[in-house]
Length: 437
Ligand code: NCD
Ligand code: ZN
Ligand code: ZN
Ligand code: ZN
Image 1 (cartoon, rainbow, N blue to C red):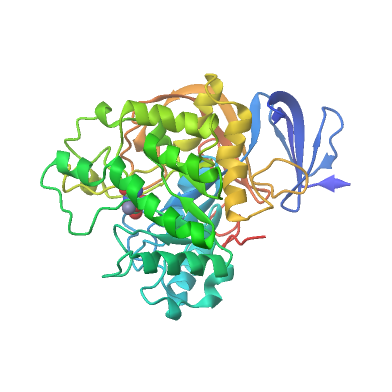
Image 2 (cartoon, protein in one colour; image 1 turned 45 degrees about the vertical axis):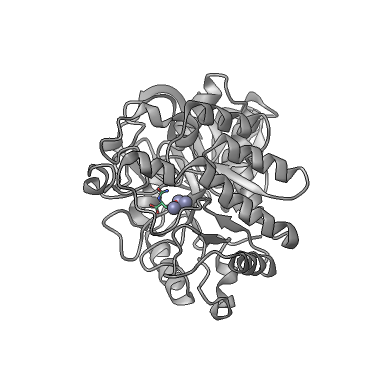
Protein backbone atom coordinates (compact mmCIF):
# COMPACT_ATOMS: atom_id res chain seq x y z
CA UNK A 1 0.00 0.00 0.00
CA UNK A 2 1.01 3.64 -0.48
CA UNK A 3 0.30 6.04 2.39
CA UNK A 4 -0.05 9.84 2.24
CA UNK A 5 2.91 10.80 4.39
CA UNK A 6 5.79 9.29 6.34
CA UNK A 7 7.66 11.17 9.07
CA UNK A 8 10.91 9.34 8.72
CA UNK A 9 13.45 8.45 11.43
CA UNK A 10 12.33 10.91 14.09
CA UNK A 11 12.51 10.53 17.86
CA UNK A 12 9.38 8.87 19.24
CA UNK A 13 8.77 8.48 22.96
CA UNK A 14 7.79 4.92 23.77
CA UNK A 15 7.16 4.09 27.45
CA UNK A 16 9.23 7.08 28.55
CA UNK A 17 12.17 6.17 26.30
CA UNK A 18 13.35 8.08 23.24
CA UNK A 19 13.49 5.72 20.24
CA UNK A 20 14.21 6.38 16.56
CA UNK A 21 11.08 5.43 14.59
CA UNK A 22 8.98 6.54 11.62
CA UNK A 23 5.31 7.49 11.73
CA UNK A 24 3.07 6.94 8.73
CA UNK A 25 -0.08 8.90 8.06
CA UNK A 26 -2.95 8.04 5.78
CA UNK A 27 -6.35 9.70 5.27
CA UNK A 28 -5.88 11.94 8.30
CA UNK A 29 -5.04 9.14 10.72
CA UNK A 30 -1.86 7.60 12.06
CA UNK A 31 -1.47 4.46 9.96
CA UNK A 32 1.42 2.92 11.86
CA UNK A 33 4.75 3.36 13.61
CA UNK A 34 7.73 1.62 12.00
CA UNK A 35 11.36 0.79 12.51
CA UNK A 36 13.87 2.19 10.07
CA UNK A 37 13.57 0.41 6.73
CA UNK A 38 10.12 -1.05 7.43
CA UNK A 39 8.06 2.02 6.47
CA UNK A 40 5.36 1.64 3.80
CA UNK A 41 5.60 3.38 0.41
CA UNK A 42 4.49 6.97 0.70
CA UNK A 43 3.47 9.88 -1.52
CA UNK A 44 5.47 12.27 0.66
CA UNK A 45 8.29 11.91 3.15
CA UNK A 46 9.46 14.35 5.82
CA UNK A 47 13.02 13.65 6.92
CA UNK A 48 12.55 13.89 10.69
CA UNK A 49 16.07 12.97 11.78
CA UNK A 50 16.91 14.80 15.00
CA UNK A 51 13.31 15.94 15.52
CA UNK A 52 10.89 14.70 18.16
CA UNK A 53 7.61 13.36 16.73
CA UNK A 54 5.00 14.18 19.37
CA UNK A 55 1.22 14.36 19.58
CA UNK A 56 0.05 17.96 19.13
CA UNK A 57 -1.06 19.72 22.30
CA UNK A 58 -4.73 19.89 23.24
CA UNK A 59 -5.31 23.24 24.91
CA UNK A 60 -8.69 23.00 26.61
CA UNK A 61 -8.78 26.63 27.79
CA UNK A 62 -8.40 29.47 25.29
CA UNK A 63 -10.21 32.74 24.56
CA UNK A 64 -10.02 33.42 20.82
CA UNK A 65 -12.20 36.60 21.01
CA UNK A 66 -13.90 36.10 17.65
CA UNK A 67 -17.20 37.76 16.73
CA UNK A 68 -17.00 41.25 18.23
CA UNK A 69 -13.50 41.47 19.75
CA UNK A 70 -11.41 40.64 16.69
CA UNK A 71 -9.10 43.57 17.42
CA UNK A 72 -7.78 41.42 20.30
CA UNK A 73 -7.70 38.13 18.35
CA UNK A 74 -9.87 36.11 15.98
CA UNK A 75 -10.08 32.50 14.86
CA UNK A 76 -7.48 33.10 12.18
CA UNK A 77 -4.73 34.68 14.30
CA UNK A 78 -5.66 32.54 17.31
CA UNK A 79 -5.40 29.24 15.45
CA UNK A 80 -2.22 30.40 13.67
CA UNK A 81 -0.75 31.00 17.12
CA UNK A 82 -1.91 27.51 18.08
CA UNK A 83 -0.33 25.82 15.05
CA UNK A 84 2.93 27.75 15.46
CA UNK A 85 2.95 26.70 19.12
CA UNK A 86 2.44 23.00 18.35
CA UNK A 87 -1.16 23.08 19.60
CA UNK A 88 -3.42 21.10 17.25
CA UNK A 89 -6.72 21.37 19.15
CA UNK A 90 -8.09 24.35 21.07
CA UNK A 91 -11.34 24.71 22.97
CA UNK A 92 -12.77 28.21 22.98
CA UNK A 93 -14.35 29.76 26.07
CA UNK A 94 -17.85 31.29 25.96
CA UNK A 95 -17.04 34.70 27.52
CA UNK A 96 -16.84 36.27 24.08
CA UNK A 97 -18.74 39.31 22.92
CA UNK A 98 -21.54 38.26 22.51
CA UNK A 99 -21.24 35.38 24.97
CA UNK A 100 -22.24 31.85 23.98
CA UNK A 101 -25.61 31.46 25.67
CA UNK A 102 -27.70 30.55 22.64
CA UNK A 103 -27.62 28.43 19.54
CA UNK A 104 -27.52 31.53 17.37
CA UNK A 105 -24.22 32.76 18.81
CA UNK A 106 -22.67 29.28 18.85
CA UNK A 107 -23.60 28.81 15.19
CA UNK A 108 -21.97 32.14 14.30
CA UNK A 109 -18.80 31.05 16.07
CA UNK A 110 -18.81 27.67 14.31
CA UNK A 111 -19.24 29.37 10.95
CA UNK A 112 -16.45 31.87 11.57
CA UNK A 113 -14.05 29.27 12.98
CA UNK A 114 -14.73 26.91 10.05
CA UNK A 115 -13.60 29.53 7.58
CA UNK A 116 -10.60 30.82 9.56
CA UNK A 117 -9.23 27.72 11.28
CA UNK A 118 -5.72 26.30 11.04
CA UNK A 119 -6.28 23.71 13.79
CA UNK A 120 -9.20 21.82 15.35
CA UNK A 121 -11.56 24.08 17.29
CA UNK A 122 -14.04 22.98 19.96
CA UNK A 123 -16.41 25.14 22.01
CA UNK A 124 -17.91 25.56 25.45
CA UNK A 125 -21.23 27.22 26.25
CA UNK A 126 -22.22 29.39 29.17
CA UNK A 127 -25.42 28.68 31.10
CA UNK A 128 -28.30 31.15 30.67
CA UNK A 129 -29.76 32.85 33.74
CA UNK A 130 -32.97 30.90 33.27
CA UNK A 131 -31.89 27.32 32.67
CA UNK A 132 -35.20 26.17 31.08
CA UNK A 133 -34.40 28.37 28.06
CA UNK A 134 -31.13 26.51 27.42
CA UNK A 135 -31.30 25.15 23.86
CA UNK A 136 -30.50 21.47 24.03
CA UNK A 137 -29.82 21.26 20.31
CA UNK A 138 -26.39 22.83 20.92
CA UNK A 139 -25.19 19.94 23.11
CA UNK A 140 -23.63 17.85 20.31
CA UNK A 141 -21.56 20.90 19.29
CA UNK A 142 -20.04 21.69 22.68
CA UNK A 143 -17.54 19.95 24.93
CA UNK A 144 -18.66 21.40 28.26
CA UNK A 145 -20.30 24.25 30.16
CA UNK A 146 -18.30 27.08 31.72
CA UNK A 147 -19.30 29.15 34.75
CA UNK A 148 -17.71 32.32 36.14
CA UNK A 149 -19.35 32.79 39.56
CA UNK A 150 -17.37 36.01 40.22
CA UNK A 151 -18.24 37.52 36.86
CA UNK A 152 -21.36 35.86 35.42
CA UNK A 153 -21.99 35.91 31.67
CA UNK A 154 -25.54 37.13 32.30
CA UNK A 155 -26.10 40.22 34.41
CA UNK A 156 -27.52 39.64 37.84
CA UNK A 157 -26.96 35.87 38.02
CA UNK A 158 -25.99 34.95 41.56
CA UNK A 159 -24.25 31.71 42.32
CA UNK A 160 -26.49 30.68 45.21
CA UNK A 161 -26.60 27.04 46.35
CA UNK A 162 -29.63 26.57 44.11
CA UNK A 163 -27.90 28.02 41.03
CA UNK A 164 -24.79 25.88 41.60
CA UNK A 165 -26.96 22.75 41.87
CA UNK A 166 -28.92 23.65 38.75
CA UNK A 167 -25.70 24.12 36.76
CA UNK A 168 -24.29 20.80 37.99
CA UNK A 169 -27.57 19.10 37.09
CA UNK A 170 -27.57 20.56 33.60
CA UNK A 171 -24.02 19.29 33.06
CA UNK A 172 -24.90 15.87 34.41
CA UNK A 173 -28.08 15.50 32.32
CA UNK A 174 -26.10 16.30 29.19
CA UNK A 175 -23.08 14.19 30.15
CA UNK A 176 -20.69 17.15 29.83
CA UNK A 177 -18.16 18.55 32.31
CA UNK A 178 -18.93 21.74 34.20
CA UNK A 179 -15.83 23.93 33.98
CA UNK A 180 -15.46 26.39 36.75
CA UNK A 181 -13.37 29.52 37.42
CA UNK A 182 -12.79 29.48 41.20
CA UNK A 183 -13.02 32.97 42.69
CA UNK A 184 -15.51 34.07 45.33
CA UNK A 185 -15.09 37.82 44.82
CA UNK A 186 -18.19 39.86 44.04
CA UNK A 187 -18.80 42.11 41.04
CA UNK A 188 -18.79 45.20 43.27
CA UNK A 189 -15.44 44.33 44.92
CA UNK A 190 -13.48 47.08 43.18
CA UNK A 191 -9.82 47.42 44.11
CA UNK A 192 -8.55 50.90 44.98
CA UNK A 193 -4.92 49.77 45.01
CA UNK A 194 -2.85 46.77 43.98
CA UNK A 195 -2.78 45.26 47.43
CA UNK A 196 -6.55 45.25 47.46
CA UNK A 197 -6.66 43.61 44.02
CA UNK A 198 -4.54 40.71 45.28
CA UNK A 199 -6.57 40.39 48.46
CA UNK A 200 -9.89 40.39 46.58
CA UNK A 201 -8.61 37.57 44.32
CA UNK A 202 -6.79 35.75 47.14
CA UNK A 203 -6.08 32.07 47.64
CA UNK A 204 -8.73 32.07 50.38
CA UNK A 205 -11.23 33.31 47.80
CA UNK A 206 -10.14 30.59 45.32
CA UNK A 207 -10.45 27.85 47.94
CA UNK A 208 -13.78 28.98 49.37
CA UNK A 209 -15.50 29.18 45.99
CA UNK A 210 -14.25 25.71 45.10
CA UNK A 211 -15.45 24.42 48.47
CA UNK A 212 -18.96 25.75 47.80
CA UNK A 213 -19.11 23.91 44.46
CA UNK A 214 -17.70 20.71 45.94
CA UNK A 215 -20.28 20.78 48.73
CA UNK A 216 -23.04 20.87 46.12
CA UNK A 217 -21.33 18.35 43.91
CA UNK A 218 -21.16 15.53 46.47
CA UNK A 219 -24.94 15.26 46.19
CA UNK A 220 -24.99 15.24 42.39
CA UNK A 221 -21.76 13.62 41.29
CA UNK A 222 -21.77 15.69 38.11
CA UNK A 223 -18.45 15.94 36.29
CA UNK A 224 -16.64 19.07 37.31
CA UNK A 225 -13.35 20.57 36.09
CA UNK A 226 -11.46 23.28 37.97
CA UNK A 227 -9.84 25.85 35.68
CA UNK A 228 -6.43 27.43 36.28
CA UNK A 229 -5.67 26.23 39.82
CA UNK A 230 -3.25 28.83 41.18
CA UNK A 231 -2.75 28.05 44.88
CA UNK A 232 -1.17 25.21 46.85
CA UNK A 233 -4.23 25.19 49.13
CA UNK A 234 -6.55 24.66 46.16
CA UNK A 235 -4.46 21.73 44.94
CA UNK A 236 -4.67 20.23 48.44
CA UNK A 237 -8.45 20.58 48.48
CA UNK A 238 -8.67 18.91 45.07
CA UNK A 239 -6.49 16.03 46.20
CA UNK A 240 -8.65 15.52 49.29
CA UNK A 241 -11.85 15.53 47.24
CA UNK A 242 -10.38 13.12 44.71
CA UNK A 243 -9.80 10.53 47.40
CA UNK A 244 -13.53 9.81 47.25
CA UNK A 245 -15.02 11.58 44.26
CA UNK A 246 -14.25 12.41 40.67
CA UNK A 247 -12.93 15.86 39.88
CA UNK A 248 -10.51 17.12 37.24
CA UNK A 249 -8.30 20.19 37.24
CA UNK A 250 -5.89 22.18 35.11
CA UNK A 251 -2.91 24.41 35.78
CA UNK A 252 -1.38 27.08 33.53
CA UNK A 253 2.34 27.35 32.74
CA UNK A 254 2.39 30.89 34.15
CA UNK A 255 1.10 29.79 37.55
CA UNK A 256 3.75 27.04 37.66
CA UNK A 257 6.72 29.00 36.34
CA UNK A 258 6.17 32.60 37.50
CA UNK A 259 5.37 34.21 40.82
CA UNK A 260 3.97 37.62 41.67
CA UNK A 261 7.22 38.82 43.22
CA UNK A 262 9.00 38.56 39.85
CA UNK A 263 7.11 41.61 38.56
CA UNK A 264 6.90 45.25 39.53
CA UNK A 265 3.19 45.30 38.58
CA UNK A 266 3.36 48.90 37.41
CA UNK A 267 1.34 47.88 34.34
CA UNK A 268 -0.69 44.88 33.21
CA UNK A 269 2.08 42.77 31.60
CA UNK A 270 1.74 40.10 34.29
CA UNK A 271 -1.89 40.80 35.22
CA UNK A 272 -4.27 37.90 34.92
CA UNK A 273 -6.98 36.12 36.86
CA UNK A 274 -6.25 34.25 38.96
CA UNK A 275 -3.18 36.39 39.72
CA UNK A 276 0.38 35.11 40.05
CA UNK A 277 0.98 33.75 43.56
CA UNK A 278 3.97 33.09 45.82
CA UNK A 279 7.03 31.00 44.86
CA UNK A 280 5.74 28.36 47.30
CA UNK A 281 2.43 28.10 45.42
CA UNK A 282 4.10 27.80 42.03
CA UNK A 283 6.44 25.10 43.29
CA UNK A 284 3.55 23.15 44.83
CA UNK A 285 1.55 23.35 41.59
CA UNK A 286 4.36 21.66 39.65
CA UNK A 287 4.40 18.93 42.29
CA UNK A 288 0.63 18.59 42.20
CA UNK A 289 0.87 18.03 38.46
CA UNK A 290 3.68 15.53 38.27
CA UNK A 291 3.99 13.87 41.65
CA UNK A 292 0.68 13.96 43.45
CA UNK A 293 -1.69 13.61 40.52
CA UNK A 294 -3.92 16.33 41.97
CA UNK A 295 -3.95 18.05 38.58
CA UNK A 296 -4.72 16.37 35.27
CA UNK A 297 -3.58 18.77 32.64
CA UNK A 298 -1.94 21.96 31.50
CA UNK A 299 -3.97 24.62 29.71
CA UNK A 300 -2.72 28.02 28.60
CA UNK A 301 -5.75 30.23 29.40
CA UNK A 302 -4.67 32.12 26.26
CA UNK A 303 -6.41 35.44 26.94
CA UNK A 304 -5.30 38.06 24.40
CA UNK A 305 -5.84 41.78 24.91
CA UNK A 306 -4.76 44.91 23.02
CA UNK A 307 -1.34 46.36 23.74
CA UNK A 308 -2.88 49.55 25.14
CA UNK A 309 -4.97 47.46 27.55
CA UNK A 310 -1.89 45.63 28.85
CA UNK A 311 0.44 48.61 29.12
CA UNK A 312 -2.09 50.64 31.11
CA UNK A 313 -1.53 51.24 34.85
CA UNK A 314 -2.06 47.98 36.77
CA UNK A 315 -5.53 48.66 38.16
CA UNK A 316 -6.92 49.74 34.77
CA UNK A 317 -5.11 47.07 32.72
CA UNK A 318 -6.95 44.06 31.30
CA UNK A 319 -6.46 40.64 32.90
CA UNK A 320 -5.11 37.85 30.72
CA UNK A 321 -1.99 36.94 28.75
CA UNK A 322 -1.32 35.04 25.50
CA UNK A 323 -0.18 31.44 26.01
CA UNK A 324 -0.59 29.39 22.85
CA UNK A 325 2.96 29.99 21.64
CA UNK A 326 4.70 29.44 24.97
CA UNK A 327 3.16 26.29 26.51
CA UNK A 328 5.07 23.70 24.46
CA UNK A 329 8.50 25.36 24.75
CA UNK A 330 8.05 25.90 28.50
CA UNK A 331 6.76 22.39 29.22
CA UNK A 332 9.36 20.63 27.10
CA UNK A 333 12.09 22.68 28.78
CA UNK A 334 10.96 20.98 31.99
CA UNK A 335 11.38 17.61 30.27
CA UNK A 336 14.78 18.44 28.76
CA UNK A 337 16.09 19.78 32.05
CA UNK A 338 14.96 16.65 33.89
CA UNK A 339 12.19 18.12 36.04
CA UNK A 340 9.30 16.44 34.20
CA UNK A 341 9.06 12.90 32.88
CA UNK A 342 7.94 12.29 29.33
CA UNK A 343 4.94 10.27 30.54
CA UNK A 344 3.79 13.24 32.60
CA UNK A 345 4.33 15.67 29.74
CA UNK A 346 2.31 13.47 27.36
CA UNK A 347 -0.45 13.03 29.93
CA UNK A 348 -0.82 16.65 30.96
CA UNK A 349 -0.47 18.26 27.53
CA UNK A 350 -2.06 15.67 25.22
CA UNK A 351 -3.92 12.60 26.51
CA UNK A 352 -5.17 14.17 29.77
CA UNK A 353 -7.25 16.92 28.15
CA UNK A 354 -8.53 14.45 25.53
CA UNK A 355 -9.82 12.19 28.31
CA UNK A 356 -11.49 15.04 30.20
CA UNK A 357 -13.20 16.25 27.03
CA UNK A 358 -14.18 12.78 25.83
CA UNK A 359 -12.40 13.15 22.48
CA UNK A 360 -11.11 9.62 22.32
CA UNK A 361 -9.49 9.78 18.86
CA UNK A 362 -6.94 12.44 19.89
CA UNK A 363 -4.01 13.03 22.23
CA UNK A 364 -1.98 9.86 21.65
CA UNK A 365 0.64 9.00 19.03
CA UNK A 366 -0.54 5.52 18.07
CA UNK A 367 -2.12 3.68 15.18
CA UNK A 368 -5.71 4.72 14.47
CA UNK A 369 -5.53 8.09 16.25
CA UNK A 370 -6.01 11.41 14.42
CA UNK A 371 -2.77 12.56 12.78
CA UNK A 372 -2.44 15.73 14.90
CA UNK A 373 1.31 15.86 15.30
CA UNK A 374 4.10 18.30 16.03
CA UNK A 375 7.76 17.90 15.09
CA UNK A 376 9.96 19.56 17.68
CA UNK A 377 13.63 20.48 17.66
CA UNK A 378 15.65 20.55 20.87
CA UNK A 379 17.26 23.95 20.61
CA UNK A 380 17.91 26.88 22.89
CA UNK A 381 16.11 30.12 22.08
CA UNK A 382 14.45 33.07 23.83
CA UNK A 383 10.74 33.84 23.89
CA UNK A 384 9.98 37.10 22.06
CA UNK A 385 6.39 38.32 22.00
CA UNK A 386 7.06 40.35 18.83
CA UNK A 387 7.43 37.05 16.96
CA UNK A 388 4.02 35.66 18.02
CA UNK A 389 1.36 35.00 15.40
CA UNK A 390 -1.18 35.94 18.07
CA UNK A 391 -2.31 39.58 17.93
CA UNK A 392 -1.34 39.75 21.62
CA UNK A 393 2.41 40.22 21.79
CA UNK A 394 2.96 41.14 25.40
CA UNK A 395 4.03 38.21 27.54
CA UNK A 396 5.45 37.95 31.06
CA UNK A 397 7.76 35.27 29.60
CA UNK A 398 9.55 37.85 27.41
CA UNK A 399 13.24 36.96 27.14
CA UNK A 400 12.83 33.57 28.84
CA UNK A 401 15.31 30.93 27.72
CA UNK A 402 13.63 27.72 26.51
CA UNK A 403 14.93 24.51 24.96
CA UNK A 404 12.29 23.34 22.47
CA UNK A 405 10.95 24.76 19.24
CA UNK A 406 7.97 23.49 17.22
CA UNK A 407 9.19 23.02 13.64
CA UNK A 408 6.32 21.41 11.75
CA UNK A 409 2.68 21.10 12.75
CA UNK A 410 0.37 18.53 11.15
CA UNK A 411 -3.39 18.68 11.68
CA UNK A 412 -5.59 15.80 10.52
CA UNK A 413 -2.72 14.62 8.32
CA UNK A 414 -2.28 18.02 6.60
CA UNK A 415 0.99 19.90 6.98
CA UNK A 416 -0.19 23.29 8.22
CA UNK A 417 2.93 25.03 9.45
CA UNK A 418 6.60 24.44 8.82
CA UNK A 419 9.76 26.37 9.66
CA UNK A 420 8.04 29.61 10.57
CA UNK A 421 5.60 29.63 7.62
CA UNK A 422 2.05 28.54 6.93
CA UNK A 423 2.04 26.13 4.02
CA UNK A 424 -1.75 26.01 3.50
CA UNK A 425 -4.47 28.62 3.88
CA UNK A 426 -7.21 28.82 6.50
CA UNK A 427 -10.29 26.58 6.52
CA UNK A 428 -8.57 23.46 5.19
CA UNK A 429 -7.03 21.43 8.00
CA UNK A 430 -8.76 20.40 11.20
CA UNK A 431 -12.35 20.02 12.31
CA UNK A 432 -14.86 22.54 13.57
CA UNK A 433 -16.52 21.86 15.91
CA UNK A 434 -14.54 19.17 17.70
CA UNK A 435 -17.11 16.72 19.04
CA UNK A 436 -17.07 14.04 21.70
CA UNK A 437 -16.59 10.47 20.60
C1 NCD B 1 -9.75 35.76 30.93
C2 NCD B 1 -10.20 36.63 29.77
O1 NCD B 1 -9.57 37.65 29.52
O2 NCD B 1 -11.16 36.25 29.09
N1 NCD B 1 -8.84 36.52 31.72
C3 NCD B 1 -7.89 36.05 32.55
O3 NCD B 1 -7.22 36.84 33.20
N2 NCD B 1 -7.66 34.76 32.67
C4 NCD B 1 -10.93 35.30 31.73
C5 NCD B 1 -10.69 34.09 32.60
O4 NCD B 1 -10.11 33.10 32.21
O5 NCD B 1 -11.19 34.09 33.72
ZN1 ZN C 1 -11.00 31.90 34.23
ZN1 ZN D 1 -12.17 35.27 35.24
ZN1 ZN E 1 -9.75 31.81 30.82
